Image (cartoon, rainbow, N blue to C red; front, side, top):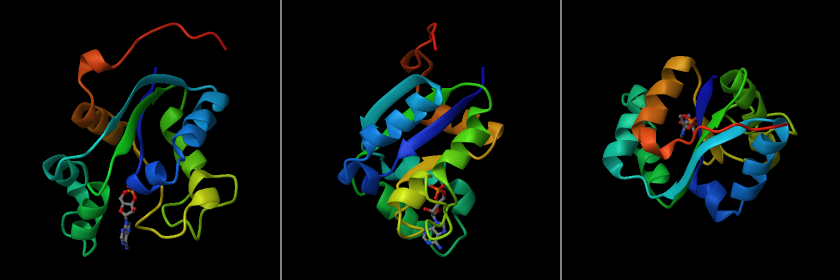
Length: 143
Ligand code: CMP
């Protein structure tokens, strides 16, 4: 079954949005395969956001994502990668529709509350960066 990496960013943790975001994914019907509150080391942040290394905001991005704890998760389900992108809304919260996480809670493109993998390749890479195999739980879930 398809899996994706979802992370409540430091602004989302500070604003007590972990519960709301977990609840949205639970109510949608996805299955939680792993989750942890963690402080991201700079080395991991730089690797995670490696594709943005040349962007002018890279330093700011790494500084922000390491500024406080994040809640990292792996969610599983049919089309979970594309569907969770829809649930998160556009990267820039000013363009994200109401009803999406960023549309409901975000204001700026930097502090946009949540991160989610954008493709199967990113999902595999990001899950591998943040979780050891033994931290992911495989179980039956009834609807
Ligand atoms: P995320 O989905 O975590 O992936 C890359 C992040 O870069 C993105 O969300 C935004 O938070 C951030 N980002 C994109 N554009 C900018 C920008 N112009 N200034 C600061 N951060 C940005």
